[in-house]
Length: 115
Length: 112
Image 1 (tube, rainbow over the protein chains, first blue to last red):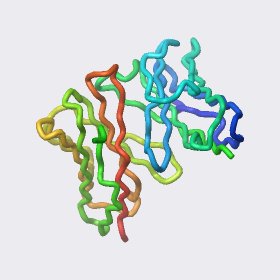
Image 2 (image 1 turned 120 degrees about the vertical axis):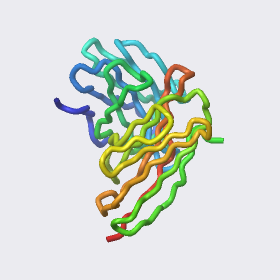
Image 3 (image 1 turned 90 degrees about the horizontal axis):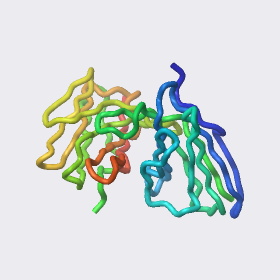
């Protein structure tokens, strides 16, 4: 099976712009979670989608949003970019979601640099 | 207090030695625990998962869980230079809608 794919892999934006990142989960997986990873804060949970519904959200401002399509592919959007949004954005997929014993598989990430 | 705490390291061990990585968590309702390995510039990959108290072994890796002490550890036997990476402890809480919380990670260096 193909793994989780994320596009683009690298992105450079300027402050105030917006960005959309895409994630395609492993075939058959219906849940997609998004994380932000920075050297200072580590891996932080952004949100989780299952069957096109956001089931959980982390402590991020409303500038961060996402959605999931009927084919389980997901996008996340960051509006009005700030320098502090520079990070590695990771997508992880699993079959049902964050069930207690369910494993999440990570994609390669999108590295975003905000200038 | 952070929800999941790890010693940031770096932890340096000689090749062939046992590397011991530790993690504590604050939510007593947590029920699932995961260890991920992340090489520099790469995404995390799952090494071990553990759900009940005690030890779980998989090859050179052993995960240990003590829910009473809110403590989970990872032992790497016969450490190899290829084990040099950052190891992330992840805890899935039983409350709050099943959110996975990651520790900041421990950097491990295995010296040849």
